[in-house]
Structures are given as C-alpha cells and as structure tokens.
Image (tube, rainbow, N blue to C red):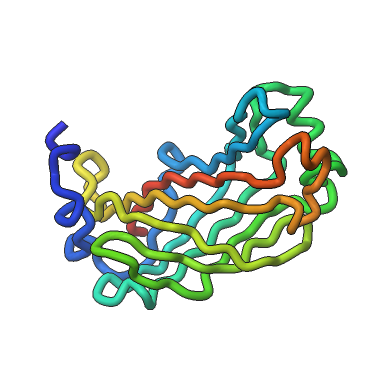
Length: 187
C-alpha cells in the first residue's frame, strides 16, 4: 500500500533502473482493446500471449527502443465462438498473419514520467504509424524478484479499418481504444 502513496514523480525516477534490456514479466502483462458493440456495450478483448522488449537508456530515455510481438491467435474475448470469428478472415486472419508487431521509431518526453512512443504497428501485413501515450509507473528493484523492474501503462486510439479490420463498421465502432499494462524485468 505504501507504493501507491509514493508521488508519481518519485516513482518514475529511472535512477534505480540501469540501462539495458528489459523483457516482459508474463504474469504481469496485459494488452486489451475496447470498442462499441452496436452502442449497447464496450467489450474488452485481449491477447494472452505476447513478448515485449525494452532497450532502456535510463540517462536519456528518448534513446530507448521498444518492440512488441503478439501471438494474434491468442486473442481472448472470453467467448470461444467469438474467438474463432476474430481469428478468421473477417478480422485478424491469424492463419495467414500469425503475429502483430510494434517497433518504436521515436520516443518523446511529454512530462516527468510520460512519453509519446511512436512506432510501426503491423497487423494483417499492413504497417501504419501509431503513437502510444505512455506513463512510467515505477522503476525500481522489484521487492520479490530482486531485479530492476520498469512498470509501464500505455494507450492509444486506433481506427481498425486502417489495418483492414473494417468488418461491421459502423455498427461495431471503427475506433478502438488500446490499453497496455506491463512490468518489464532486467535480463
């Protein structure tokens, strides 16, 4: 509970996170998205399997890089039949395009612990630029794992049609809100 009481600026201090490679703690990683379903609800769908690698420059975070690779077939709506539909040709077509990738191209500081991470997002063979509004929640030695750890929250609004995911627009919203929560461990 004391961690939650820390001021945000202090918790984002990168001095306890040495430069180098950080990879996903798979038990603390979430990539989800939400959209409007006929105006009745805003489902939250996610991916169960993905890798994240941060090459951190702690003295100049804007020189860092981020790469994410998602197993597209790990999509999870909590409804088996809908998962099959999402894996099919109307949506992610995972038989032909098994991975979704993001590779950063530019990182800009927007505040004490916030950054805009711009990169190339590839879905279904289409690559388009996306900017993730990113917050470093905490960078410190993990109290249980005893390794430097960086906690990150990121979000973006996407138009799914830009990647050929335009089935059922406008009944199902074109706009999708992407949310990312990850803990990255020094390796």
